[in-house]
Every structure is written in C-alpha cells, then in structure tokens.
Amino acid sequence: MQKTICELFAGVGGFRLGFDKLRSGWETNWFSQWEPGARTQWAHDCYVQHFGDSPDVNGELHTGEDISTVDKKNIPDHTLLVGGFPCQDYSVAHSLVSSKGIEGKKGVLWWQIRDTLEEKKPPFCLLENVDRLLKSPAKQRGRDFGVILSCFAALGYSVEWRVVNAAQYGAAQRRRRTFIFAYKNDTEYGKKMSGFSAEDVITGRGFMVSAFPITDAGKFLSTTIGTDLVDVSDNFAFSFENAGYMSNGEITTSKIVEAEEQPILLGKVLLSDGVDEKYFITSDRMEKWAYLKGAKKINRTAANGHQYVFSEGPIAFPDPWDRPGRTMLTSESTLNRSTHVVSDPKCGKLRLLTPVEAERLQGFEDNWTNTGMPDRMRYFCMGNALVVPMITRMGKVLDSIIPAEQ
Ligand SMILES: C[S@@+](CC[C@H](N)C(=O)[O-])C[C@H]1O[C@@H](n2cnc3c(N)ncnc32)[C@H](O)[C@@H]1O
Image (cartoon, rainbow, N blue to C red; front, side, top):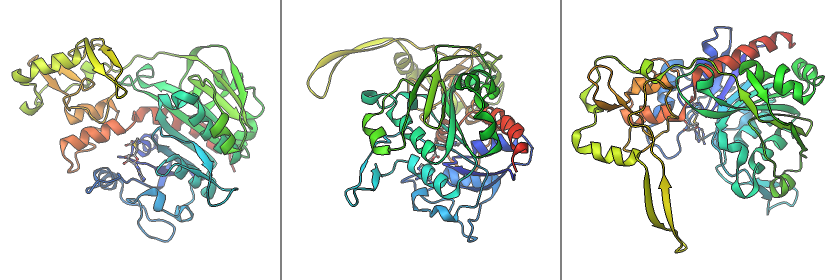
C-alpha cells in the first residue's frame, strides 16, 4: 500500500510536518487551505513556500480555494485523509427539495470531510478537533460526535477516539484535543481489530493507546448508533468519555487516565537573548494586564434583563517557567487574559511570547511561519495549528499497520 496523504484544512501544515518527520515514505499528494473572507491567504502561502503546491488529477491547482467548491472526484487517491476541523453544529434535517435527501447546515466543514471519504474511500483517516466536540451541543450532549460516528459507520469505517493533553506526552503545551482515527472495516487492520473486544481496543490493542499509553480506565459504557442521520440528529445523546471505539454501530467509551511523560517546560521554550523591545510590556499597560489575569467579580445584565455576577479566578501572572505552556489560542499576543505573559530570561522584565516561541509551543520548527506574514498572523496560524509531535507519534503507529495491507 502506498503511503499517500490528503490534508484538508491544512493551515500551515501541522499534519504534513508531523508525518514528514518520520522519514518513512509518507507523501502528501494534495491539500486544501483557504481562510474564509481573507484577502491575503497567509497560511496557504506559508504552506506552499514550505512544500510547494499540489495539482489535482487534471493537473490544475485548486488547493487555495474553499473546499466546498472543489469536486472531490478531482482529489488524487490517497491512503490517509487527515485534517483539523472546527466544532460546529452538525445537525441535519430532511431536505425541503426531496423527502429522501438530507441537509446539514451550510458552511459546516464536517460534510466536506464526509464527502471526500465517500468519493475517495481512503482506507485510513485521522482527524483533530477540540475536546468539547464530544459533549456538543449542550442541549443534546454527544449529538455532534454521534453524527460523525454515524457517517463513518455508514461508509464502512470503525473509529477510535482519544482526548489527548499534549503536555502528558512530552510536549511543551497543555493543549487538549480530540483525535479521531478511522479505518475501513475491509482493510487487513480492520479484519484483525474485529477480533478484539472494545475494552481490549481501548486499553491495549488499539491505535490510540499504542500512540498514547494510559495507566487506568474507568467503567465501560456502551450504546448503539444507526445510520439514519436524521434520526441520530434528532434523537441521539450520549456521554462520550475521553476514550472510545465504534465498530458496526456499537459504541464503547471509558474515561482513561493518560500516562505521564516528562513535558517540556515553558522556561525551556523561551529565547535566552535578543528579544525585540516590541514584545515587552510597557509600564502603562501593566495594570491592565494584572487586571485581566486577576480574580474578579462583575455585575452583569443578560440579554433578557436577568442580573448576575460574573466571576473568574486568577491565572498565573506571569506564566511559570516550570510548567508547560497553557493552550495557545488564535488571539495569542493580543491584550487578552489567555495570552501568555512571561518573565524574560535575560532581564526578568515581563513580555509576550515571540512568534518563534509560539512555534516552539506547537512543536514547529523555529521561523516556520516567518514567510512574509505579519506577527499577528504568525500567532493566529499557531493558535490554529496542532502539536506536531502528537502527529508523529500517531504516524509511527500507522507505520506499523501499513505493511500488512495489500
Ligand atoms: C484548525 S485549522 C487547522 C490547522 C492545521 N492543522 C495546522 O497545522 O496549521 C483549520 C483550517 O481550515 C481552514 N479552512 C476553514 N474553512 C475552510 C474551507 N472552506 N476550505 C478550506 N480550508 C478552510 C482555516 O483557514 C484553517 O487554517
């Protein structure tokens, strides 16, 4: 089996970089990256500067366009479909045009992944999403992930998922993300895995536990899911835990305890010298930063007139050197409570992370996004990206699976 990858929602190429680092023959033969509403496509430009562009099956370049406008037939065949996509409303309804058809909400990117799976039928798929995907939406917990599992089941895939805190597995950032690994039931791997119980898959035999070892698992909870998407969308609810498995519509989940490897500490990520003055916090702004980071209780009025007290606790200010970083958001470096503020190793004064330090928190190479984009966009791209070594870990497990395939 060839080791080819199609990378959707590619950003600045976190998946590709993670697989390239294995140096085991993976080749990304197509990708898609388009930032809605942006005049300059910074992430696409950065991606192309590093890796070059990728023609489709007609020899045309459509990688920098809205994926929903791309005919999935024109995407080159691939062994593995990868992508980091947002948590959105995945509900569906019967379409008004035809009672047999179904319709999801417009602009929901999951359907682009589903359509690609349906058209290209890759044997393997690896996706990334935020941790709250498993609980969404609040009024029908688990529905959105249920919709995803139902689609996979209908297309003949089994699925494993895990919520992974990168810092537990040796990275520099406490970033929790849901990883979803799906494989076609008719692959050699699929046939082999069908011989194991769901408990075995989750705790010992499966893909995720091989990449991300665990120390314990809680009670195993089960349910079933059908392939009638409207029914799932209307009625399905389930408490998905941080690990689980779905095969032929049988879902099993358990709250596992992640094993702990020595993380990279924030102090190790910081530049020891040469940091430009513009990253330092000036004295007139210090009070504002201290306020944002501090505990507060504020009287607020909701839209319906209801009065309530908004309260939040303090967060470390500055961020400690002896812990991994917190989750980096796309707003990193703006005047914002979640922006990291650190004490500079050389002079001890407080400052923001530099773009290179933001890249290090995500496990990218220094200056990966130094491709002509402004600082603001470098932070934005890193906030959108993923922790690259997590991908390499999962790639290693895939490398052990592929040789058994025809
Ligand atoms: C969560 S980010 C993924 C980042 C990526 N994993 C990385 O390592 O940089 C999702 C990406 O999807 C892109 N995107 C959003 N809507 C899109 C669309 N309709 N077509 C193609 N790409 C889209 C966004 O611009 C964003 O870069």
